[in-house]
Amino acid sequence: QSVLTQPPSASGTPGQRVTISCSGSVSNIGSNFVYWYQQLPGTAPKLLIYRSNQRPSGVPDRFSGSKSGTSASLAISGLRSEDEADYYCATWDDRLSGPVFGGGTKLTVL
Amino acid sequence: QVQLQESGPGLVKPSETLSLRCSVSGGSTITSGYYWSWIRQPPGKGLEWIGYVSYTGSTSYNPSLRSRVTISLDPPKNQFSLRLSSATPADTAVYYCARETGSYDASFDFWGQGTLVSVSS
Image (cartoon, rainbow over all chains, first blue to last red; front, side, top):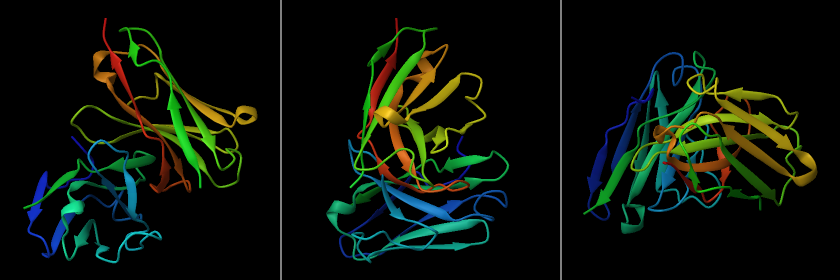
């Protein structure tokens, strides 16, 4: 049972816009930045969004993040086949005194 | 470009201690502001933070694993290590080492490729 709640799956067709939600509480998302990670099959996670809505250099602007209250979202526009991966949200939890992850969302490009 | 590489046994017997090392290149483990973490992922499941050692050598652990975990820094070798005692099959996972860019945060900017550790007799 993950501290942060994500839908287990999401899907879209090439070119579409999809969003992935991440729900938490006051002690985690409500008080801290949210991070998003992309994990391609058989590889290590890669930082996709930092500080809730910032993109590291090299990450396409098709990827965007937002946060409101105790929830956050990752949006992917202009969906491409290479976006098929698992996506994880993460943040610091003040109560647990450590980083926590969502359970992950498997994105399928139809 | 910072690179991390995990190493250690791929098979551990139940009740024994799981030990892994992470070698860091392209950066120093004692550079101010960085925290060197271990994260694991059971097969087909999500990510779990195990703990970190800071550039000063201070540590922080996941409360659910605190009684069994030790993470330490080896600055001369530019490495850090993980020891997880009393291993059980539930500890079977891919173990990643990663660099965290600040305390009270969840920003892991560089990761190792991961190493699968199976706990089985």
